[in-house]
Length: 124
Image (cartoon, rainbow, N blue to C red; front, side, top):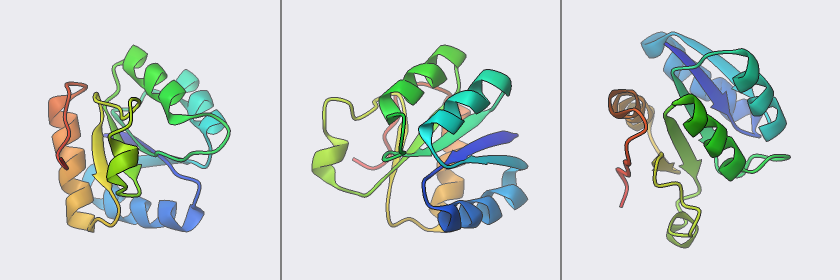
């Protein structure tokens, strides 16, 4: 499985890489929305895990591109219920609020890849 990880914090990306590489295979990282869109144009992915607050390109534009390509997504949020309930709260994506454990992240990946792009929100 090939997973695209996108978050502005490089230390967090390293941690996510460790959590996911062993269990699921190859991970590719991106630090901003522009990099995510470039990777999506050139590479096929089975899943995208992206931080809701990526710089340069907003998550809504990235989610649109993911939906066009049929790539399921997990959106990492700060756990702010008001933010997660906003009109652009991404009903097609699984929302994983901080803080979460490595086991919760692995479970979210399994759920997202089993469900594809069907509406899922495990944290309501």
